[in-house]
Amino acid sequence: MPAVRRTGPALLAALAAVTALAAPAVAAPQPSPVAHDEAAAACTGTAPVVCHFDVAPGTYRVTALIGGATQGRTTVTAETRRTVLGETPTAARRPVVRTFTVNVREPEGEPTGATGSSGLDLTFGGPAPLLAGLQLAPAARTPQLFLIGDSTVCDQLGAPYTGWGQELPQYLRAGVSVANYADSGESSQTYLDQPQLFPTVRPLIRRGDTVLIQLAHNDKETTEAAYRANLTTMIEAIRAEGGRPVLVTPVVRRWFNADGTLDNGTALLVNGLGVDLPAQIRSLATEHDVPLIDLTALTRRRVEELGPDGSKALYLTDEKRDNTHTSERGATEYAAMVRDALRGGHLLPGRLFR
Image 1 (cartoon, helix red, strand yellow):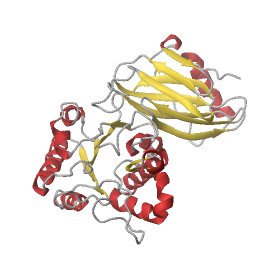
Image 2 (cartoon, rainbow, N blue to C red):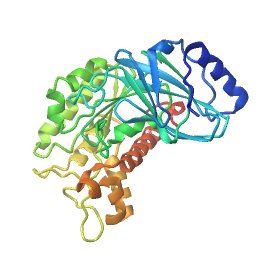
Image 3 (cartoon, rainbow, N blue to C red):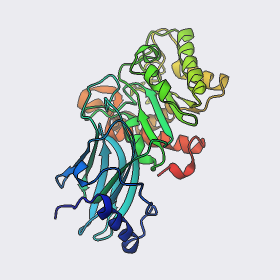
């Protein structure tokens, strides 16, 4: 049976009815004022349900009524394959309300990549997607979580490539906007130099925003002095805008020694000049009193735990002979590590985590 998409007053009635039908894991929110009526949102299909809102760049709060007459298992992605809601099971006639925040920008994926479609795109997919209602409202004052990084972090356009920043939104509730400005191929220097990157991100930072910085994979010939200077420039600029910088050591590459441990050079991001980049990030975090997420240590532990064979599933080893870029599974696991570090370090309010 095709899912019914409701907006405006019809959705408000449906949302109110949910509390009588079920006790969702998250209490039904009071929806923000309706920003677009039914004519402004076009949803088509059933598996998946694809919706497009013709809106300007900005931050939007989405309220969805998920469920239907049959059992469902629904996953929601936004824009360029960003997972904003993990697989959500629903019992027959027991819909649930879920809210999430989406950052809409042009281009919608990588900042220096293809433009993509304008407006906001949402896809309700998964094994058995069911969408009963949908509402969209501007959320301009929502706190922002900016991501500065490379191809291991960015919103990758094409599967199977997936950056951990692409999977992070599913672990956060409405109330924080993940603005992923990571871009493929960028070093600490090129990220500062490219007009679409740090010069664009800096003026968007508001007081209280958090900015994660993971740049190392492409600093293959960067000197220690230049690397430290580049990251220091970002730290100081973010603080000058009222934001809070957080340094993130890079995800490891999947290069093993014969004994099953990761190679101390390529895998652990020691560059061609012998600069141990994760060590420099740790040092800078201490020197500048910046919170640190040691993703190198976390991902190393996981990859070595799985071993040479099991760890292939985290990367694109079999699909692309690529031991640097992650699969959807790997990106999802690594995003969960970032989520846990953000929560454990009290870098975002606890109420914002799923």
